[in-house]
Image (cartoon, rainbow, N blue to C red; front, side, top):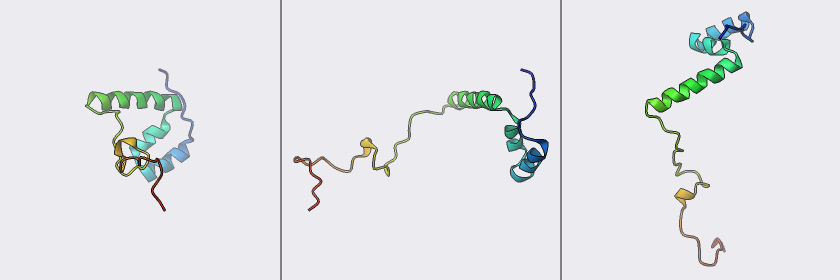
Length: 81
């Protein structure tokens, strides 16, 4: 792949380098397409190292049906008087 000119001006990239470091500078210097490809490579590496894409159960989430707080009342009402 031929190297393309960065979409962000050099002066702004220099400012990014001083604020966030050289690794982020390299990331911001990539084009959106190059970032997409790099993200895909990172996901493959994550999976190869034993990572999982399964969602982590969140017992604090009120909408998670796997963590229902109690049985549904017989009459279907909330029980609030």
